[in-house]
Image (cartoon, rainbow, N blue to C red; front, side, top):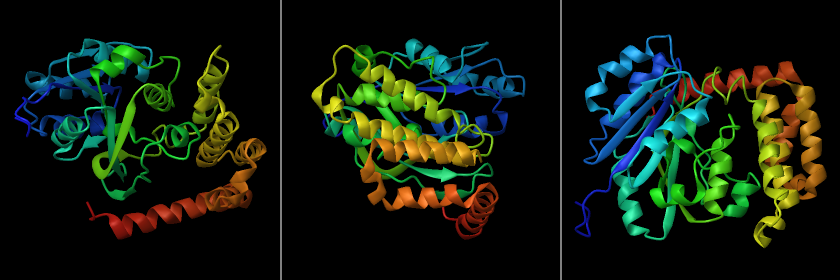
Length: 321
């Protein structure tokens, strides 16, 4: 029972999964071991062939339901779960990420304190493929302006929203496979209040095979498509209209970082140029120059520095969480 005497609202969590048996059990356990008293948990598998289904069946008695069938990608799988859900508070947890203990109860308590908030998110820890702690996500309080212009990012594993939010803004866009959360958060932020908590409540896994790794070059193009959809609309609110150039600058800047991560240095350089062409104020940003330095240093130097950085982080922080 909450402090105001009301019962615990139902929380619905969806885990989309496809051939992630290496991490799936840890993800499932992190949800079930929350011991939240009113939990609905759906696993939507895309037809895995790596033993994931056997892991799901192992936990079937504690699940609200699961399916394993071919789907249209991650967004489609998440939508299948969200549309099956009946909870008051919703969220999804990818099959290689985890909740930290107390995540759901803390979030629900915060919703009860913030009756006007349509969405609440917390910070996350970044871990590697061996569960070693790497870093904290660069957390910032929410503002629609910072979200649209890429000056802050809502960490998806620790984001939750009320059912009335989904009733109003709908579900994820299935034509997006990388930046669907970025687009969804903007949709929510244009209609509801969003509140951020600095305390880490989940773990985001960063691996070379993840979308944040070798597939990073796909992000920028989706950012541009999202912005094209917003700014080609017949009507747009003034706050969004005045952010147009800065929004595109942010999309090119983040896209450049994606190409850099994927070691496509030439494309990264081109996107960095387009970013500053849209917003000259980026030249006053230390981080822009830091990324530009990495871009201009070339593929081999950047790869060496990145590898050295990972090694130092592992050696210094492997036992910090």
